[in-house]
Length: 401
Image (cartoon, rainbow, N blue to C red):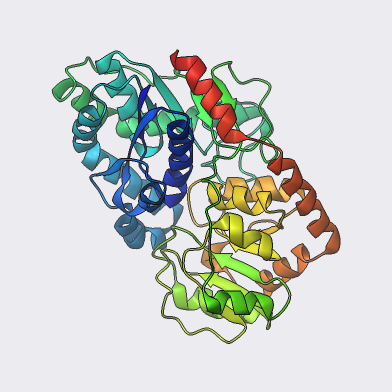
C-alpha cells in the first residue's frame, strides 16, 4: 500500500508517527510523511521519505509559551488557521496515488478532508486521548477541575471548541482547494488509533470499537555511541538525574537553571536544553549539559527523569522503569503528570510558572524513595511487554484492506 502520514506539531508529536511510518515501511508499504520542518530529523535518520509543511512551530512556542497555556493555545489556533490553505494544497499533492491517509495533530482535519476528496480511507492517529470517555476528563482542562461525572462531557466540549476554532478556515479550504461542501459539524466516525500505553492509560471500557490504544510508538533503538564526555560522566558515579524539557521554548531559562542547581543539591545530573534556549547557561560540575540522545539508550542509565510531561517523554521515562518529576507548561502535560501521580511514580505536578527550589528538591527526594523506584521498575517491565507498533500496523492493515 501507498500511505501518507500527515501530522503537525512538536518533536513529540512527529517522532511517534515517524516510528509508525518506519514500521509500515519495513514490511513493504510505501510511506511518505509530512510534518513541521524542525521535527523531521528522526525521519531522515530512518530513511523515511518526507517533506515539510508550511509554518514554524518552534518560533511560535518561543513567542507565546511565556504567556501560559491560554496564550499557547491561542497561538496554535492562529498558526493552524494561517496555514490551513497551504497545508491542504501540500497534503493533496503528497496524497496523489495513495491508498490511505494517517492524519494527526493540528493538521488532523485536513487529512480527513483530503482523504474524502480522493475517496480513500482516513485513519486518525495521536498521542493524546481525544475520544470521549467517562473514565477520564479532557487532557486540555486543568487537573482536578472536572468532576468525574462530567468527564465525558468535558472531552466533547474541548473537541467542539477545537472544531469551532478551526471550522471557518477548514471549510474555506474544503471549498476552494478540494471542491467539497463545508462540514456542518465535527466529524467523529473515522477510526482512531492512539500511540498510548495501556499501562499508563487503560483502554476505556466505554470507547467505541473504532478507537483503540495500541501502546507506545517508539523509533527503533539504533546503534548509539555516546560522546567521551558523556561516557566518562556516567562511569564516574551513580546513575544521574535526567533533566529535559523537550520542545518547550520561550521559558524563563535563567530562573529554571538557578532553581534546578539549588534543588539538585549537588546530585549528579544530565541536562538536555532541547528548544529551551538554555544552551549557554553556565552549570556546575555536577551537571553535564548534553545534546540530543536517544531516550531508549539514555533513560535506563538514569535514576529520575525531570521533564515537562509531554506524552512522548512520559512514555519513555515510564518504559525505562524510572520515576518522573513533571513540570508542565502547556497543553496535555498536566494530564500525563496526573496519570503518573495516580500510578505512584511521580509526585503531584509542579507549576512551571511558580517553580521554586524547595518544592523541586522535595519532589526529587520523594521519587528517590526505594518503594517508588521499585514501582517504576515494575511498570517499566509491564510496558516492555507491549508492542504498540505491531498492534497499530495490524489495525491499519485491517482497516484499509
